[in-house]
Image (cartoon, rainbow, N blue to C red; front, top):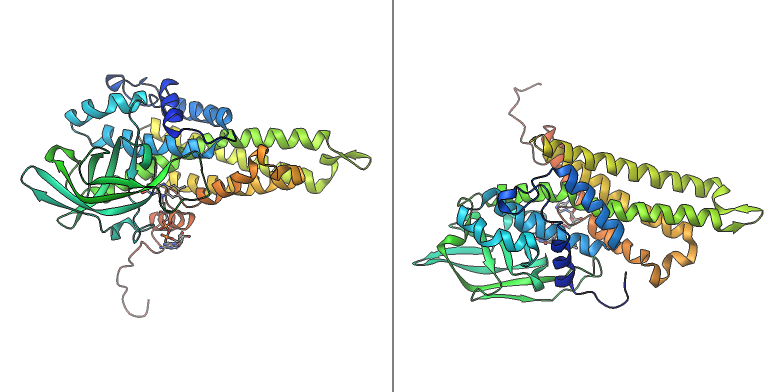
Amino acid sequence: MTASAPDPRRLLRQCGRQGLFRHAVATEWGGRGDRFGDLLEAHIQKGRECLDAGLILALNAHLWGAIFPLLRFGSAEQKARWLPGLIAGDLIGGHAITEPHAGSDPASMRASAGAHPEGFVLNGEKRYITNAPVADVMVVYARLETKPSAFVLTSQDPGFSVSENHPTQACQAAAMGEIHLDDCRIPADRLLGKVGAGLNMIQSALEWERAFIFAGIAGMMEWQLERVIDFSRRRDSGPAHLGRHQAIAHRIADMRIRLDTLHLWLKECARLADAGKRITLASAQTKVIASEAFLQSTLDAIHILGARGLEEENGMAGWLNDGAAGRLFSGSTEIQKNLIAALLGTGEGYKPKRQPPGT
Ligand SMILES: Cc1cc2nc3c(=O)[nH]c(=O)nc-3n(C[C@H](O)[C@H](O)[C@H](O)COP(=O)(O)OP(=O)(O)OC[C@H]3O[C@@H](n4cnc5c(N)ncnc54)[C@H](O)[C@@H]3O)c2cc1C
């Protein structure tokens, strides 16, 4: 947590140098060929080291927004062209789903792609896109002949531009911006996956992101808890130390329960992913538990630390905004609960079969 604004590109390149984008990636693409369990441990460690939710957000957007969709849906040519640079951190990536009129419901996206003799021409606007101002490669979702589809765009494509409108007060180390597509012409080989597969690809990318984006934040929460325990022991409060008060001790116990619950869910996601099983339900549950835990434990930590919890150099006050953002990015808490209910066969996403009268 430095006072001067960090350079997001340099920070992401450093993550690449540390090998952070090589976990759970096959060796043929420059990965380590190791497991999601290894990825999890490396991300937790990164969170402890950087204590920066903005950097955690940025590296996850790069990984799950660009690298994994290319690995999963890219043609051999697309993989060979983009993956080595992205995995090394020499190229920066992300994904652009959200629009001014389509946030929680990507199915209502308006960005469009039309065919032209050499490829596609894209028009539309994307908003709140992590890494957009520094990205070389973006996976952008737009309707091709009304069907949501995915495209690989580069910052050099004619008609592709980024503005830094609507600055937010959260995850500040991440560069965020709007993407404008004004008759953006790209060659035919930039279609990623199949025409009309866009919504499934969004779901897939967000599933991975939800499962692991809070791994780095778990590392930050470990540091936060240690800091609070240490303070509660050292701070005098009448004849005893601060932690002797049950009201304080219980808050600390709650922080530990939340952190351990988060660790268990992260491990469960890694276990399922390593076993090649679906993570749809587990990742939605993890996202809800993790984002609520981060926000609540940050409130508790600041409260226990007293006014010093709000000191600027401490950085924890900024985590409150990061925590609020955590409940929104990768799909909000409400959207995860809708998804969980739908997977249970009820709720907003479930269409009941017509019942005979009287039942
Ligand atoms: C820090 C940050 C980084 C981001 N990075 C990216 C990125 O890299 N790429 C990208 O494409 N997007 C990104 N986003 C956008 C993010 O995905 C959206 O903010 C999110 O999907 C919610 O959309 P919205 O903000 O438009 O809110 P809305 O969809 O307008 O929702 C407003 C409120 O209504 C609730 N709500 C909406 N629909 C329902 C429903 N059906 N049932 C119950 N409640 C509902 C929501 O939970 C929310 O509380 C980022 C956002 C943030 C904050």
